[in-house]
Amino acid sequence: MLVLVVDDEPETAHAIARHGSGPHQAMLTAESAGQGWRLASRQDFDLLVLDRDLPDRDGLQLLDEFRGQGISAPAVIVTRSDRVSDKLSAFRRGADDHLSKPFDARELSARLEAVHRRTLATTPAVRRLGCLPIDPSACIAWAAGRELPLTTAEFDLLELLTRHAGRTVTREGLLEAVYGPDTQADCNALNVFMSRLRRKLAAAGGGYPIQTVARIGYRLDLNQLST
Image 1 (tube, rainbow, N blue to C red):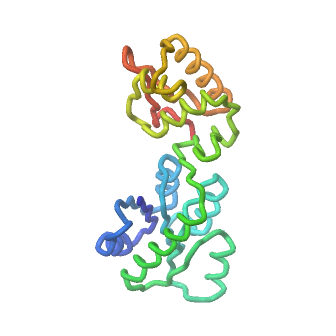
Image 2: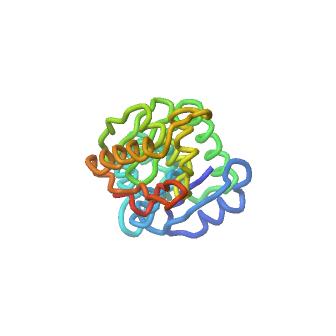
Image 3: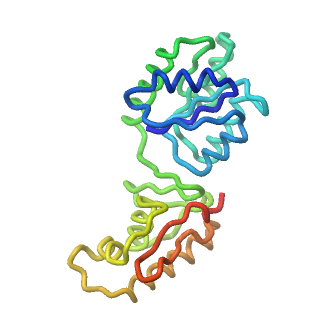
């Protein structure tokens, strides 16, 4: 599980690191809303921990921006306020839990685990890479907020590339994704599919993230995804 902590007080991040056994396998930290936004727009996170008292804006404003862009990772709001009105405001604006500072780090860890368990039970697995969310269960992908009009074969290719984002997928592996393991299809058919997939991504505003790796295959380059 990957956790994004946006808090300008290093004690919060250190507390999660010290008590982050179990599902908290990795953590990235940001000291401002701007830094948090840049991280969340390029990487999927399983959980968000957002401080309300950030130096550049309220953590709830950042949460509004995340939700507006389709970033649906569950969020725990931490704040020095223990007023009921502030807690209710956080829940109404999309928070999944609320914790007042100072807190016991073990309680925060337990709350994160509980929120994560609830999310696994209720939320479909949508993979988000830059501006390219993809829902393997529904066979739907979006680029820059627009649903891509993909054929089954094109979706299968894109899904495989996103599953191995940043790494080269061989031509053989891509052909198997479309035709099955015993395929006799040649690389010309794959080139046609890739050409169509690239055009649809570009037309939707997704840029040109699919790179050709000479004599090997193709790679989805996250740095080329528009945001």
